[in-house]
Length: 199
DNA sequence: GCAATGATGCACT
DNA sequence: GTGCATCATTGCG
Image 1 (cartoon, rainbow, N blue to C red):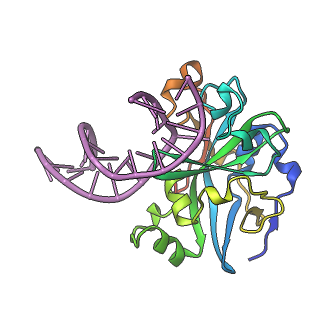
Image 2: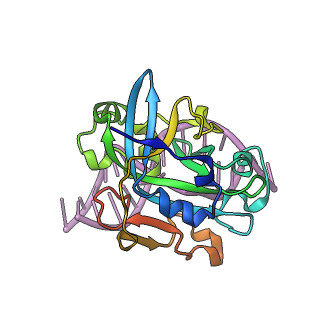
Image 3: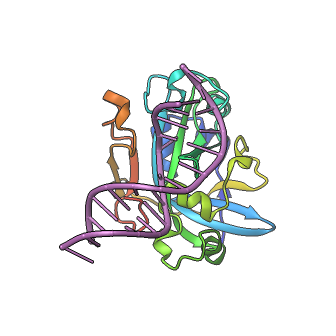
């Protein structure tokens, strides 16, 4: 498969633009020279200290400091004690914003994904959901802060796959009802014709 | 099929 | 001690 890594400037733009442009791109995980690849089908934007649903809304902490750092870095955190969530940091340094990757379409390394997911048979459940895709690609907090532009283990790539603007749907974000006025913002983006959406 | 529940770790107050 | 940007399993129809 032919593809090229996305450059840093791709991630230094407006978070919503980055989120929409990430749809259809490839997430490539390298483990012991083996590749696991998924196409991004669903994302959410978390933007700045004014966004109450964003972890950075209450200022910089040890947990979220990666979001205040350079665009194109991985922000991985643990949720509900058992699941990791994978984000890509966007925009300028000291401006906390990121795109949460919620769902992927499996492209390559299906057998390894299945193994990481406990041997389940339903391919649609390998990577549909932020906790699931991290399990399938063996993403945990050891890659938190990794530079996805100059990666050792993980990067985002473009293989020329074209996504029509009309194929992108939006909706309110998931699991953020506590965020008041920010809970209903349509900052979730997904490919409406894909079978690989977390729902 | 669907709703309810339990598992579980870490950062933060 | 509390509260999560979740998922798999159970128990019901």
